[in-house]
Length: 188
Image (cartoon, rainbow, N blue to C red; front, side, top):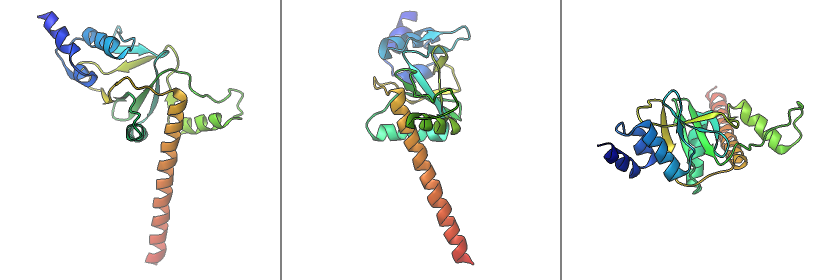
């Protein structure tokens, strides 16, 4: 009975709803609206989307995204993150007001320098009005890496956490390279 499916979907978490093929996209979108406050709608292609605005997203390569989500969880700040394909992670933020470098070509602020560095590593902010696709029943490409739980992060704080993850990765890579050089020197 259709009413039973709606009630079953109401009792499920976001990942369960997204994977439950008995729930329709409309039911899943309603769950996202009611339980998590996302202005989720079903688009003309049958995907569940929220428009960037009150909710924002930061897209990044998967290895970096996994590092960021892990760092946030380890620090007691788990925020929603969606794995969009095998190579991209979208970290959901509470707005699209990201720190952006000046458009004059000159970067004068620390935030602008950080933003440029993030951009060079494949980190992109989804701008206002752009669709952010959430996991939905039958979607083989998207899943919750960290399900929504009421926690949010500002775009500026996200930039800081992502920059720290990049610095950590770069420091680890530099240490590995130094160790390899030492091994080659000692092997001679």
